[in-house]
Image (cartoon, rainbow, N blue to C red; front, side, top):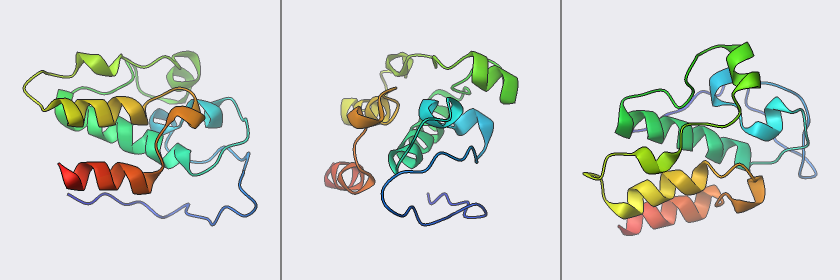
Length: 116
């Protein structure tokens, strides 16, 4: 499966941005809080989509911008069904780390998924 939406794609120069763009329910916490952010916001979005694909539930309890701003704490990823391999559940959980510094770079995420 390949997922892409480059309608708002921009090159991040000099590491960080602060503009609030994207689909509200897939925005990383740092984007919602209007903090500086880097490429790891995309890893958060991949985690949201992965969670939805495996659990058949939205990560957020309610959809919409207001809900996304109020409910920054997502459903815990360890609630993914055990029928999926640990490496896959672990990869999604790492993508959904609230701290951007704890999320894997997209390249290492890809490598870990391809190796399995």
